[in-house]
Amino acid sequence: MDLADYRSVEDFFRRESGHLVAALTRVFGPSNLTLVEDVVQDALMAAMQAWRFEPPRDPKAWLLQTAKNRAIDVLRRERRLVSLPAGLDADVELAGTVASALSPTEETASQLAMMFSICDDGLGQETHVTLILRWLCGLSPHEIAGAFLVATQTIDRRLHRGRARLAELRRLRDVDDADEMRTREPSVHQALYLLFSEGYHGSDPTHPLRPALCTDAIRLAELLLAGRATDHVQAHALAALFCFNAARLPARLDDAGVFLPLSDQDRTRWDRSLIDRGVIHLAQASTGERLGRWHLEAGIACEHAIAPSVKETNWDRIVDHYDQLLLLNPSPVLALNRALAVAELRGLEAGRAALVALANDEKLAGYPFFWAARADIERRAHRPAEARPLYERAVSLSRSRAEREAYQRRLDRLGV
Amino acid sequence: MPKFMYIFRGGAFVTPGLSPTEMQAHLAKWQAWAGALTKQGRSSGGHPLHNGGKTIRGQDRVVTDGPYAESKDLVTGSLVLEAASLDEATELALGCPVFEMGGSLEVRPVAATDDEAAGGPR
Image 1 (cartoon, rainbow over the protein chains, first blue to last red):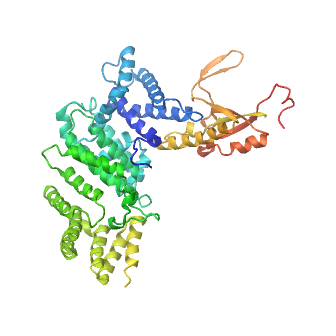
Image 2 (image 1 turned 180 degrees about the vertical axis):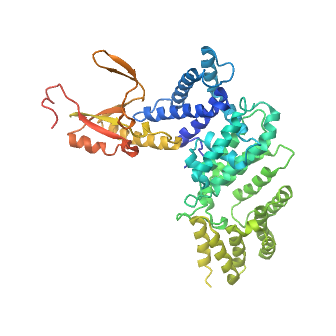
């Protein structure tokens, strides 16, 4: 998949599903989401049916017209059965309301309204991501279950909770209300961050990378920039972070599907257009006064993305950014990454000391990358006997073939 | 060249719960298969049908909503193509994506009325 062209027609059905669900939920009201899903499913099925011998001149216009007609039919039919938002009682109003909700000018606002309604305090982060994947990215419960490596019933339960919570709202959140937007914004950012991470180092052992999820996260982060009441500075920083990391996806696996460490990645395979896009976002994120988590993480990702080699990377700035990040948000995984940057900046012994200091952390103890990182340092310091058991531990904890073989390969090359 | 009609029944178009990605991937297969027939100059496109409609039956012209067939037997479209023989038309049909989701395809010779094709298909 071409990551740079995230508007590619390849995911046309998925993207339009997200657009239509959001737009029609604004008309039908959040309590009638099931009805909305039926209308969207019908419209997409009709498109698959009708376009199979010859696509229409303007597929999007065709699909919107079909969805509009079905929505009006369903609203007329269900009017007495379900409680619809006020103002949908007269036929003239009904057609006009549906048409304006589906107009191009409302496309961004609808999806923002959906995203901010989903990221509700009453629901957990995992549920936020699940609902975003379902209603904004057009994944089926089965596909979401595959991405998270959980049972489809678990996903169904999250969707059920989400539907119930949304049903309590009379209408979707008002995207022009700054107060409503600002209180939910951190949850939205966090959900998009999780969505991106799932694509970048996902839990699926057979598909360790899921570029489509990264592409969705970029698309939705850039959607925030079209909002009138959203925090554009933070959104630019988040989008920059996603672009820099997504740029490196094409080089993360070798031809055998095994993870490559940064030092072995072919940097000519990094996506220049995404790096450029990240640089533009980061420049626009720098207009604010607050240096937040996304700025610091994007700053680190930027230094990696623009460096010609590991050696010629600005490790000084990277360590500084990690120090600031740890002050904002102490996390063992951040501390691990900081230790690796310290090894590059101040030498292997300094890096080793920083890593060993983390050895008692329970979370890191179960994290194969931690043991591999320690092994790498020993190997580079010419202590293969020390490296061996550490690599073996990394191999035994690995969650995917891509990961396991990467460590096994380094273990095999130790030569002791 | 003799003409044949493909009559498609059931398949993805009557399968509930397909995801947008599955629908788009399935659509792409249809377009590749039907597109190849057009490119070879054998067909000028098919006739996709929506699932609804009316049925009219009997002396009394009783009109009812929708075709009554079970979903696997529901006619979902047709396509007319040129082929040298019924065997060739059948062979060309084997690559049709309708079979992927439990659908079926009927190959029927179009009865010609011009002199050349008189006598039916060979």
